[in-house]
Image (cartoon, rainbow, N blue to C red; front, top):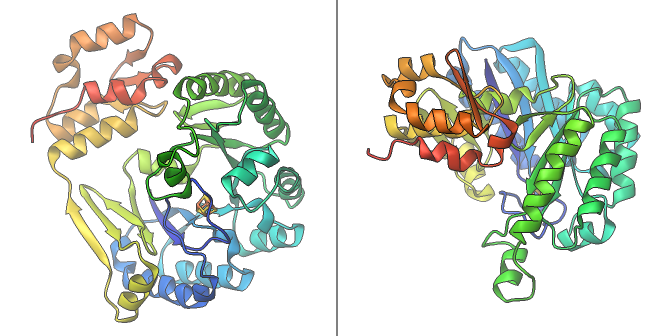
Length: 377
Ligand code: SF4
């Protein structure tokens, strides 16, 4: 299984908490599109012999692409890569871009999964985040998406916001679930340095995240979503009827993928690379037919630790046979006592050759994984 990620590095306005790579200079979109297509052509050999099962247009705001731009991009991918018949094709979107007409065009272009950045259903919180939409637009676009025939819709929500009360959070989750979405990703607000929020917190104009309130919101998130028919298949990701994100699952399962566009990352067994996170320099380089990327061969220690960190955050956990094959290491024998303690505490399960965390263990997934890390080079 292999995937293609395309980064669309443009947004209408900058959300105050966001540290992704994007520009609000929409005038460069046409030129950028030409460069993305050029990079797809330049790198096609990397995927020779690999069927593509997922295409993911992320950003930034891919829903800013006109239908013509999107069609051109997808046509280019289909021309130069082998796309499997049942491939997932996800587009990240903001609610204010998703008119009924636009949704119809997206479906016609071949998008079969939407990931919609709703974040909150509270207008004052949306304004505080500097989002480009309001709650009514968010609910309307979910309704329109369903009417347009999309049966694989994911929404992003944010908790840990200063103005978010527990009851309001639970009510928002319920309303979103009632709209019939199949997938929900929920992230805790983080204060990143080079953002408006980071500056405000540093200057004392905003309070830092209330960790205790955020932890309580996460706990209710998990319990409420499970009660509403979702399965927590990754710490921050929930799906109904096994509508897992194929694309994200392939990241967590260390499948091969290429990332196209500025700031995109790529991975193939033991090797990681990433493109420059600067639109002007990215385009200038691609226009000279030079790939603007850096590469890193992962050490045994880094590969192993990464495998644990990502695997233990998912319901599939880690495959001890696979660990043995890849790292020549007997995990069970090495960590017998730690595994026993985690099982006794109800935080983990070892069944056959699969070791995974329970729902209770997910609350401490990162800490538990790091307890098993290799520390020496
Ligand atoms: S729309 Fe998304 S990528 Fe753009 S600034 Fe907001 S959070 Fe960041």
